[in-house]
Length: 64
Image (tube, rainbow, N blue to C red; front, side, top):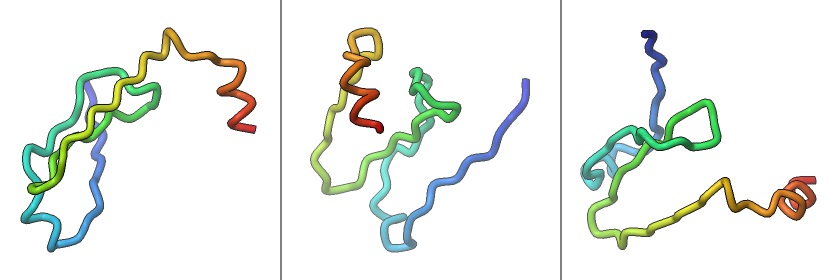
């Protein structure tokens, strides 16, 4: 097993508002895992993306 150090950039003022900083174990379609955290006082946002049902044609066109 090997480790890769990754960082999260932010400001010192925001540090006091970060709750539950964690690295996700879910696949992210990237070579990095998602970093999850909650900002105290913020409204949670749930974003779900299933790569198996992605319409790849328009997606690739939009990337161009």
